[in-house]
Length: 309
Ligand SMILES: [Zn+2]
Ligand SMILES: [Zn+2]
Image 1 (tube, rainbow, N blue to C red):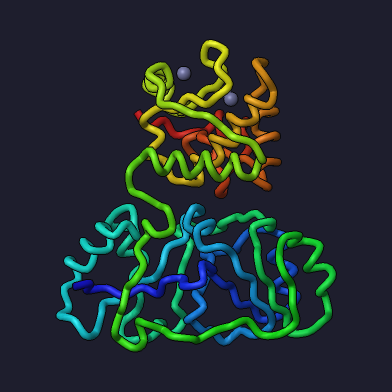
Image 2 (cartoon, protein in one colour):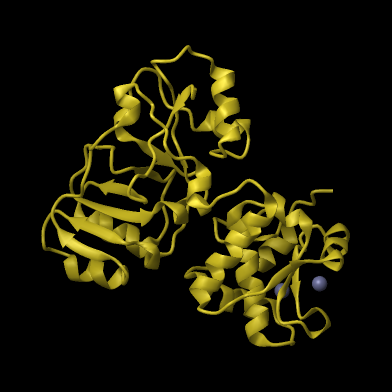
């Protein structure tokens, strides 16, 4: 029996409610959340009615968005067993992530059916937005322009359908695997490869590679290479499975950049092409590893990066 409750995205979407159509346009222009990114499922409700943006839930999960969970009220309260179950079901990578996403006591916020980013300043690709609702017609054309793949309509987004945590039943019918996320490393790399290949519009081959393993041991920020003995695919070090998906997507995008460039050098060029493919900038995190999350430029990163050894 599950001791926890989360709101599954029954329609495969996660929603952001905003106070006004202007806020919607602003978010689409910056493509970045200011602090934590907060979403709700179709079953949640928030006090904002100015406009709503909907993303595919599986895309957001790739960016590190996870559900808020609650202790079930109709089961004996066992906090640590609930966390064990959450990890087993693949909702969170580790105990800390699970604890960070625990909801408030009672049903304080349970009505929102909230999902939340793990870090501040999460960036997103506006081409991934699938649906937008606006309170009125004003700004509808501008919003359409900045979210080219979204269906934009005037009206109110669906909300507050059937909140399982609030009703206390906690009927968890989904787990993360149903969205195609497995905890095993190969699937995580595969997911990043599939995502980038899909955005690029062609197939991308990849394999584990001992030389990539050796390069990573030598230089910890190296995880992948291309054109190994002239092969037009991506070689991946096993250590890549430990990386967050934001890094994996950026690294794969960078390597696809190399594949497109052919066998000639150019790290910034590979980042630029990779960024175009995933619809954003490839930046560098504090370990100077490419990321589609918050980061700095390559030069700054290489100057100041933290050596994990
Ligand atoms: Zn190789
Ligand atoms: Zn490179």
